[in-house]
Amino acid sequence: MKISKGKLSSLFIAGLVLGSLTLADNVKADTTSVDDGQAQVTAVTADTNDSSATATGQTTSMQPVYNALPINEQTSANNTATTAANTVATTDSQTSATQASANVDTQAVAVDVLTELNNLRSQNGLPKLTNVDVLNGYAQSRADMQVGRGSINHDYWSSSAMAPYNYNNKEALGSWDVASLPNDPYQIAVHFINNFYTEQKAPEGDFGHRKAMLDPYVSSVGVGVSIGNGLFVVALEYGSDATANNSYNQTDMSNYNASYSYGYANPSQYDKSSLNDEDHTTFTKVYTPNDFNGVVDVLDTTANMVDINGNVYSSPRLSPYSQWYSDILALINGQAYFRVSKDGFVSANDVRASSYMDMTATIPQSVAVYNDNFQPTGAYTTANVPYHVDRRSINGQFLRVGYGQWILNSYGM
Image (cartoon, rainbow, N blue to C red; front, side, top):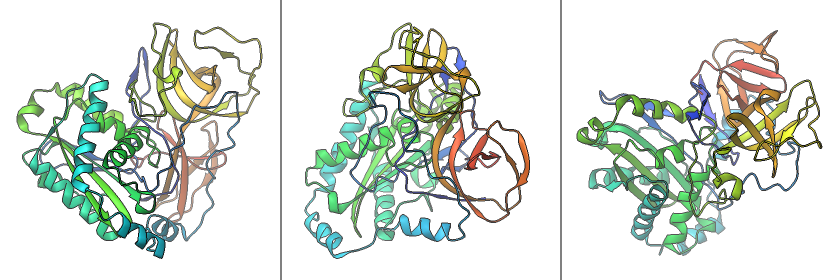
């Protein structure tokens, strides 16, 4: 199956276990897995092509999903459109911006990116990553490659070039249009770390960048920074050498890597992130939040809401079949709830949840189509036709390709 990325600004993170609640998921979207005879490698990418960052969860009242993703229309030109969307045109204004930004100290940006990355890890009780020349060199070559072609993707990436730090390797790529580039290296560094943390421009729906930055099972990192062709690119190459890798609990490391495909994240914080509102950072015996970015569809009965302490509201209640945007998957008194307003949570038992995606998938064979209740409809997709995947079920088993149209996720998305 051929997969390409869309343009949506999205927010996704990854997690494994919510207290007593385990949400299993086998999804990997827009990742590259490579096995060079070492530990399995996962590469993730973000499309940070502009400086805008709109945080979720800022509503003060309950709102339906007016901002839901557009649903699939079977457009044969989808691949061409996606390629065009990911290519930065060289306009006169961008050329001027490139020239104006030519005096940006890329080495200073690299230093500040590393500092801010380790600041994030320190805030979350993790050891700092060691900066090593081997990974710096590879990261720089990867950043230069992205600039050379005017867009970012993981083509030609290989962990073998990162030896001896080629255990548990990961790559993160981000780009910023030079037209909106400030001249302050620290501001640039914070922009990239914040976008990686909040996943503002990633289409995959897995919060992979935050998981990589907060991965407790990598010890080293390289930073590459390059500018040109209308783009400012940052490449991060993560890895460990054999000694560090062997010091980790291999089962725990494997479980953490598996969590890259989940559409929600374990609790964490970053003091530069717009997610640091009270409900994202409050942890009590009653309430534990996990960042989430998606939609909940109320089932066929009216649903009650509760507050952060689990107290049931007498009103309002959520209508059957209504849709609501959600930014937090929380444990309240040991039960799973999705936040649908500033102070309102709905039980996971009363809704069908799905996380946002923005991918294009071309499936070489015809596959069965399921309805919103994940029952077969008797219909089938058309082979070799691009479908826009805009949602993934919270358990990772189904992908939505149209209103009321889902297919089994058998493709590692």
